[in-house]
Structures are given as structure tokens and as C-alpha cells.
Image (cartoon, rainbow, N blue to C red; front, side, top):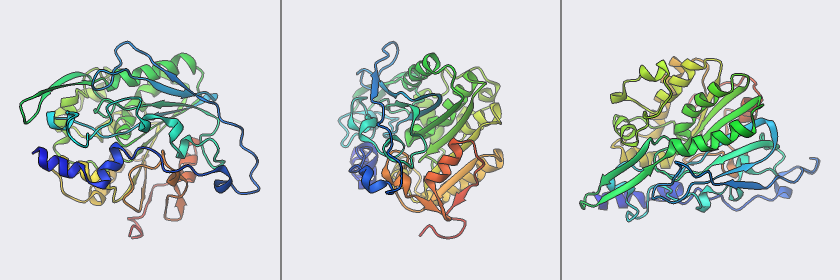
Length: 369
């Protein structure tokens, strides 16, 4: 089994998730900005916060998160991605390459090295001047873990993983609650593994800020459709420590899916604009689907998931773009992604500003190829 897993995880697309979260070479402001654009003020520096307490990364190393101060009334919270594990063989750091990011201090968890929405020098950035909270990912549980788990590998070795995803994100949210109490617009988002958790935390944040407009966007996790997902969520303890909401009580955990987090939040906060972005042939999602025992193409699974959610949540919006790239918000391609004549950056700007946006899909006009 380890041989099969190692061969799959060595695929270039999979390596893009666990090590390719690092940004491509930065685009200079001179190359990115038209000559007529006014000079962008210098960005505030990132501050690193080590909250301690119950927070931990997978192997017991410290967790930390990053904050770039800005407008106190406009806050973007980003949950980073970086793989996942749910068995002894996948969680064991001896598995090469390791299929998840196990340490908070890795380059892929450093927003100073990322582009896209973190590039304050780009005048097209919809979040320039906002307070930005960047939550690193180091727990292998899509930020949803409810505690520590000891797995057994196929070689009969025990591997203990600190699935502290909920504790880590809550520490970052506690900082937001204490330091941005008067926030009026909050953009809750995440990429890859962070996208899976983002609708859950959008509901948590909306509960805390009844006076604010909370907008949600999941970036790069829309194609996961497999009966194995319920077991993965159970392994992580994803439903341990959730709020005492009737919407959670209604979930059948034996058949739960990642889409259920959208349904719970939408039912509790029907006023919230929820959305998600995916490339229709996302190669990293395809590799993880293989690990989940599903060989169907991402494109069809994504279309089915989005159709199901649109039926349950009429206000949800989706952007399906061509290509096999994985996530967009962290990379310079955020400014060039396009489908149906609509650029992703303009679509996200509309979401962030509270404007009505329509769903966009290259599948609807056969322009994906």
C-alpha cells in the first residue's frame, strides 16, 4: 500500500500542494500596474503571533499565525492549505513525500512569500488596505480536527497526530474578536484544505458579528465527492466541539460530506453570500480523489457538487475556470483567471464589496478546453 501511495504522491500535481504552496517568482509592481495608476502606499508589515494554549501543529511543534494591520472595519481571514492525512501511512512523516504540511514555519505558510490577494503592491488587489489574518495550516485535518489521534501504519507502527485544527483557527479568530471588534465587513476564505473548512468558520464568525456583512469564498476544494469522506471527517473529529446548533444536529455523520458545512452555515445565516472557485481539471484534487478511492474526473464531480449546492442554497455562487491549476488566491494567476468573459479578480472584488455576482462556468459554454 505504501508503494502505491508513494507513487501517487510523487506526481507533480500532488507535489504542487505539499511543496508548491510557495509562490512563483513575484511580479514587480512596474510589470503589474498600468503607467497611469497612482502609486500604491507601502504595505504594513506582517506580525507573527504565537498564541500557545491548546494550539499545536501535527507533530507537537508550536502553532503561530500572521496579521497585517489595515482598515479595522474590513477584515479578511484566510485559512491556508497544504494537503491532509487520515491514516497511519499518510500521516507518518516517513512517507515520502509527506502528503500534508506539518509545520507552521514552512515557507508555504509564510504570507510574505505569497502573491495574489497578499500582494499589496498590486493596484488591482481587492483587499489592499484591509486587515488580513493569515492562518497557517499544519494539522493535516483541513482545520477541522477536534483533538489528538493515534494511527497505526501498515508496518504496525503507531503515529500520533495533533489534529488541533479547531483550536488553532479559534486562536486566530479570538485575536480578531479582541482587536477588530467593530468590523463591518469580513471576508472569510481559504485555499485547498482551508477551503474545505472555510464555510464552517464563516458561520462561526457570522454568529459573533451580527452587525457585520460576512462574505465567504472557498478556493479550490469543490470537486471532492466520495463516500469515503465521511470516514475522513470522523477520523479527524470534525464534528467534535462544533457549536450546539440544530443545523449540525441534522447532519447524518455516517454519510457526511464537505458540502454539509455550506448547508449548515447557509441555513443558519441565509443572508450570507457564499461562493467558491475551482479550476475544472484541478490536478491536486484529482490526486486526492484517487487516495479516497474515486477515479472519476474532477470536472464532473465539481459540476455535480455545485449543482447540488445550488439546489439547496439558491444564493450560492460558483466560478468554474479552465485548467488544472490548484487554487488561485495565493498566486499571481488570481489576476488572470477568466471564464465566460469574466475575470476572477473582478468577480472576487464584487463579492468583497457586497455586490451581486452571477455564477460563471467554462462548462456552460464549452470553453474549458
